[in-house]
Image (cartoon, rainbow, N blue to C red):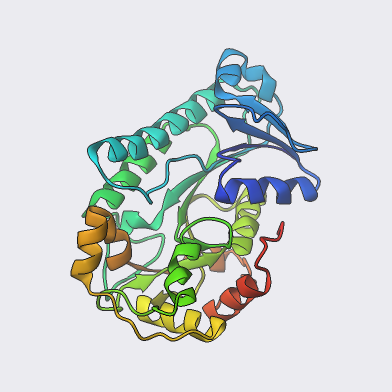
Length: 303
């Protein structure tokens, strides 16, 4: 299959690209700048090249759009603008590309996030749960998904992603760092939910969504067993043989991180109902086995 990946040089994208190549697919990475050294087997195109000559991607059967500036930055006015603009730009470019291609791709897998459900200590969210815009992250994701509706005439999957756990990027290295320093503990009340997924399962479910023509619309990219912040910390402590004892009050996180602290102090319990109903099997459904695998494989495996 011929697959194009937007955001193919990021934390998830580079592992996805390597995995798909290993599976025998033809992979093209869309990026702002082609790297000086191109890995063997990959093709790179810039957005400028594709905009000028869409036929460079003729025959593409699937597009995966993972591009977007990380939320893990200071939410200054400039930072917020970067977060929003990076998502809107690539979604609109993807929509324009799909319209220009003949024949059109069979599917577009579009990144999104579970923040669209809002936050709650008591509710459980599935793909059928309503949007609930309560803060900056949820407003960004709602705008992101609305923009993705411009991608027409193809099957589209909106991948609502939780905390993706891997050794070489994302939030996990920072989440375990206090434990490595011996000062790990719950943050705030510790009751806030963490809806997580192992990077290996994240890659596998993207392939699953590409291949399954009956998977359409929102898909919760999270493991089936979310945990609270306190439980997450306890499991890190057990896996790495570190104490879980040093609680961090909410006001300290707000003082240090400002509005960004919402990501840590608030959460949502999200279940991948659609994936489970369609028969997707998680290799890491439970957090202890996921973290044990990450500890065993300190150097990120190529899935």
